Image (cartoon, rainbow, N blue to C red; front, side, top):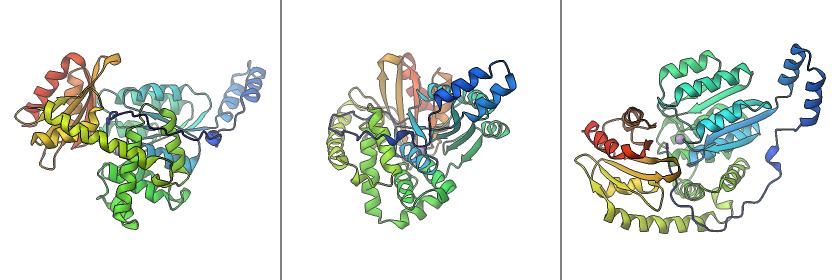
Length: 378
Ligand SMILES: [Mn+2]
């Protein structure tokens, strides 16, 4: 899913074990490298050579808000080592820019981060910088993408793995199977389930390996732990490490207890949505105050009786609303495409799947966004 916002950050003790092995594939050669650069400072060619050889880092920038992003990062880590940087959509470009200026970066993977009209040009520019610096870049995703963007990326030799029919983790699994252990297929299965993509060609084959109920409860508990820890980046990185080490969600301490608390909060959300929900002809909508929009949006759609639900939450510090949109099975339009265009028109950004997408909308434009969306989905 895309633009999944925070549900609730609750305060159960989760105490991620601090691991020292975070830097697996990134041997530090700081002092040595500096000396070499200093020695060769007068010779341009020599500096370039040194700069190339001191690039050793592997980084995976992935989506932090759902099991597909976290699981993609875990499988990349298992296959290639290196460190994960977990981001949400508002933080995506900052992380990419930072990676682009990292002189030690050798290889960059970007996972489960869809591009929109608003972000794609800047994304391509950053990729150009990375490629100029000879960084190998692999972009793996399943969100709707402008074909011209794919062409532009391939032209500068960014490796693009893109299929709108399989979730990102399944694509990572499929591409790098030979570098992964057997358990990776389970991690990919959980990601497919949370992205509603366990019925796709590869996803469904993977699910068949495992007992359906076992996979469902594992995927759900993992998801609740991810959603409930959005404000604890260390915990999310810890989850990446544990999954990379082939742990099942139930083997990670306290995950089921934490999920139970999330379930309780969700049941309270049902009551709140019943009270606060509003409708237009074609959609139900609601402003969410004390939780994330994405945790409420399915209830908004379901309880409104409409085929489209919109939930939005103010990000006070950013002057924007984080908006989540869901469509029912009866919804025949591609919400991700509509929202991408509409959000861009209103000075925001957005996009995603046909039945699950999101947007960032400037605060004064939220009413306009909802009324326009109501018209466009008629
Ligand atoms: Mn995904």
